[in-house]
Image (cartoon, rainbow, N blue to C red; front, side):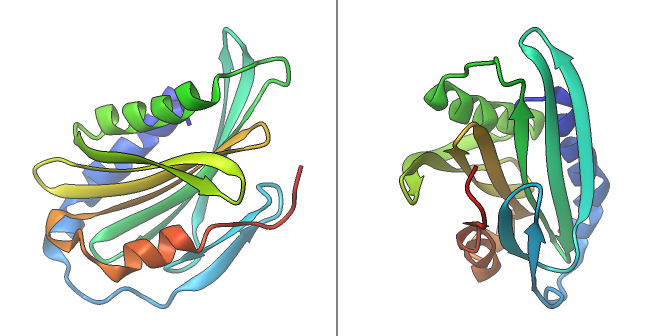
Length: 177
């Protein structure tokens, strides 16, 4: 998700939510399976997510970022994808790393670890990052022509929360291209 609008939205959400990330300690609300038909994926989220969609003109043609955001006390969970212009040919590894680097930069965080992963046979990376107050764990996959990204942002003190793994590991493609 390279678009700057997405990163600005995420940064604004975390900035606005920083007091709740720092102060709330109630357990997460009930989790439910969310399915995006246009996104062709499903994922567990702590409640019904809000959708944000932005289209931007780029030097490579138009791209549309689709993001679904759900909040729980002390946490924000995001899942989404980008649709690029069909003529745009991106490098798989460069795209995954750009998603990581743009998110980390927008959050003023530092990468702790990056490792290669796969979703079925599709390439991906998982990374963790943090700043003074938050912990981020994210997975980026390239499935067909779409980069998908799942992001969990929690208080730094909650970096071992089992909800992070519950969220990330529940991502599933529901329909192939």
